[in-house]
Length: 48
Image 1 (cartoon, rainbow, N blue to C red):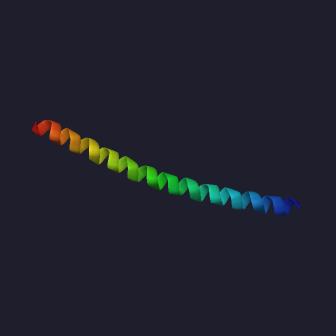
Image 2 (spheres, rainbow, N blue to C red; image 1 turned 60 degrees about the vertical axis):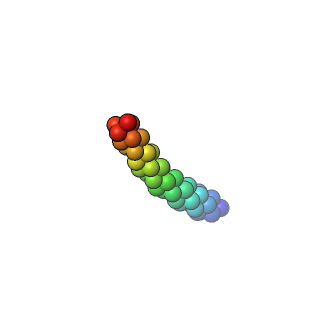
Image 3 (cartoon, rainbow, N blue to C red; image 1 turned 180 degrees about the vertical axis):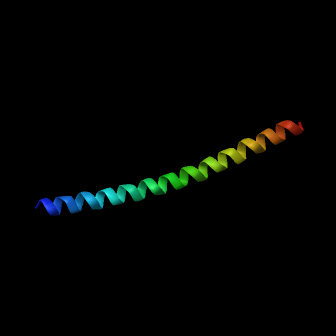
């Protein structure tokens, strides 16, 4: 029974890690978009 519970915990942990990996990937994308947007605004601000 202990082995069974450990296996479930491992599966859950793996799923959580995959979710976290996916979230961190998306955070990086959002972060890059944010930087691009800020640079764009600064550029326009500089022109005007």
